[in-house]
Image (cartoon, rainbow, N blue to C red):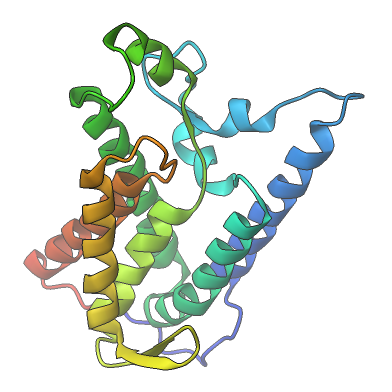
Length: 219
């Protein structure tokens, strides 16, 4: 069911997502101080399921952790810009479900790819060690799900690349997805961006829209 209430600039789920992410980012920095010596990234970030550091709650908590200031600023700005429109259209419950499911999908595809794929420039004997120590953080998977939804629901809305170049949302989403696919397939060993997590968010967004269409639900 669509939400017919007055448009809110900061709807409740988006607002709480921003608050939780910022609080955890600040807490991560504070707790890293020698007096505490607690690494929240290793506790709440998502580890490979065969890692000794993996815990089930990480499938959720990794979405609220970020690596540095630019990482959280970019993600939260985008969640606010695009997520606000989705929550106003769908309502809070559907938006939150979509956000979490695309986040789960991002994590699933990321580690599924690396489970079956040999990493470049890493000796075979060190593959398992790398996977033991790797950790994924960030809202980017859910964000790419949000971008996919925005492109589907508002395809002709003009976005401005670098605040100057106009491009329709549908082309922006398609182009961004292709860039992520190319970057993921390039398999650059110096690239620490989880491109397949981004694609996982988009893929599960497509699956959700397909499910809604099969059930003849409005979106």
